[in-house]
Amino acid sequence: MVKSHNKDLYTNTKRLETLVDGIFAIAMTLLVLSLAVPQISGNLSNQAVENTLYQLLPNLIALVMSFLLLAIFWNIHHRVFKHIKYVNGVILWINIIFLLFIVLVPFSSSLVGDYGDYPISHIVFNLNLLGIALFLYLNWFFAEKSDFIHENVDTGHIIMIKRVNALFIIIALFAFILSFAVPHWSEWMYILILPLEALIKRYTEKNIS
Image: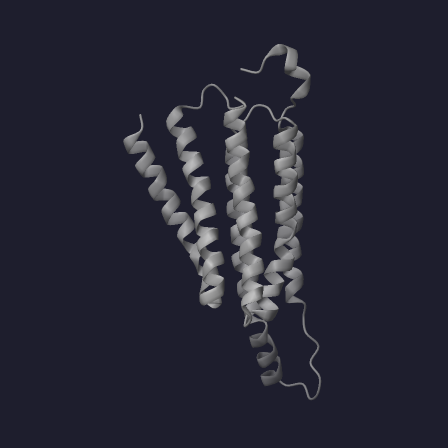
């Protein structure tokens, strides 16, 4: 419980959650800018349009993957803050830096879409997601450490959220390492997020009362 003489140092989470929602909405919308309709030089034909659209395929894949990953991170952030009753200056700044990595996603995603043949593009993208995963984990870590979690949240749920957040860090780290060896396959590591998250939840519920 937060001590009364420190009450002025803490604030409700609603304004922070509103800011986070707005930044996520902007970042997810900006992703579509990588799919600007191209100008075709020379003679126009159906085949010319098809070839041009085919060239946009890497950008489309990068957009869809980045959009879904942002949706997953937003969902996790939303679920985490359902259980946090207060934030202080440390958690506020953790979220500000977290949002910095969020607004960089349209850039790193476009980099992969435009220059996916080069490892540096995948390295930048996966570093971007590693930063998101790390600061998402720090949110819960400092909230638990500062005793800002609602009293009705049981120990099993606290451990489960911590494990799920750690999972994102591990997957992003592996994707970053793969960027140097097999860059085109590195982003596909993130497909593991949903099934592994489900396994972690089932395991935690089964083994922690």
